[in-house]
Length: 460
Ligand SMILES: [Zn+2]
Image 1 (cartoon, rainbow, N blue to C red):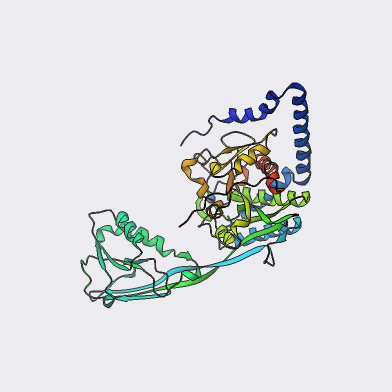
Image 2: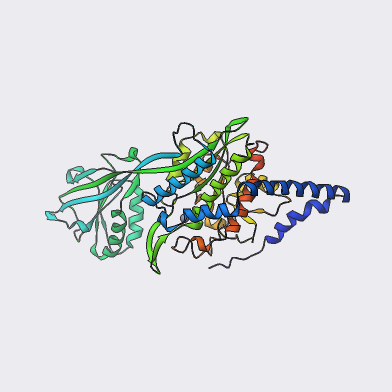
């Protein structure tokens, strides 16, 4: 698709040269020495605590075939969670307030269509010709005495167009579908038959379900519909730990990445495991490595939370639950890290920040990186809506300066969401340098001297 290697890297270099050029000679040397010394001390320190080898081993383990692609609700993700928990334990993090362990557990309910019995104008309908949208009840029944509106879908308009407008209506309806539309009907039915994941509070005995019946009938003089769903309690867990702040304990800085991925998908060259090495074992690795670094540093004035989110790929449930468990006003900033496994389009030692202009988070990070080899840029893919496509979105909507840091060339990465997103395709050096860039740039937020501006809250 779009060629990826483009401009901007020139402005990146200007940042490094500028402080030396504008100062008089003597001061220049002093400034240069100070900046360099500062950076060298810092670089030395971080490399003493986390090494490229350590980073490589973390990501290799998380993306190994042994973890089976870490799909939510599978044994593979359980294994990954245990691994992360064990790392947090070795590092010496504390569980979050109110939690006994590093697993922040919650549950969802999976609803799956199990039985459909429909008679229409005295005729029994084959269950393969019945589907229901929005049925959040275990048992659902309906007959003509309900005076539910009956709608007929004709073949004169595309099925999807009619289906979409009906599904948005949120009204109970019975829809007769012309058999000429059967191929689209079957396609949507296959998707609905996979079931849906809902909150237990959304289960109701009286949902506004839309029942579609594939049949040539043009009216429903009498009918009876009985639908049954199976309900399955589905356990989920984020893995989270913290380092309490020394003087500003109530102010929280979050470092996050999602540890779930797609699991087993369609095989390519006999490989069916979507390892998700870049997406997002790389970000999870950064979270663990940063935890190790800050724990050793022991100078965080603010409280630091390190969290590996579950279920990002299937709807962001992990970050939604995490956000519901704290007061967003207490969160000073969120560094969400997604896909840092390969060079960004700006070249080596660069990454970008989504939603750059929504707060001054990015500007603070850039300021803290002056005089170092690393640079943060604004997200170069605004049309891709990346700000809303990761786990930062929930907290950002609640007003937190919550941004995602990434290096992925999203418009051209052929390995994205394929079985080929494997450890061997990554550049561990890039991951390591991005982690160091984040550690350095977060310094003044961690030590409480900088507080990024809030993002305007989204109201429903
Ligand atoms: Zn993904």
